[in-house]
Image 1: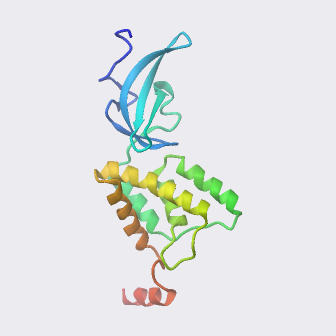
Image 2: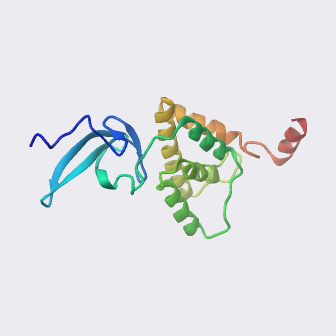
Length: 190
């Protein structure tokens, strides 16, 4: 190891060591260190990112970080916007499930909190609604997990508390957990 190999306190492209970030394909991680490595005879500066929950470590070239969509955690007001999105009416296209599943997967891996919130909203099922298929459930849980991890990091709460927060907002959505008639009387009373 040369003395140039590690630059622990340096910041690159606005990212610094110890900072929580969002990596599109994996969600929330922490920059463990910014280091320099020699790869194929060239010096390469890398973000070493740890994903605690997945027990995974990823090395991302500093020069490519922004172009691949790595970003800082969302601001609190953006988290509030995402929570408002999950309260909205589900928008389910009338296309084949395989096409919709592909679109949902792309949204989840986009790293965009609002897009992830849309997937959570669209795939959520209340107790009184029809059962989800296995693949719907998998996509819903993946989106909920991604959303909860970022909310937990932003609001400095546990992931369990973040999931409860999202589920509370989901329950506030239109016609969820009550029949259509009950919903109409609620609107008149308000």
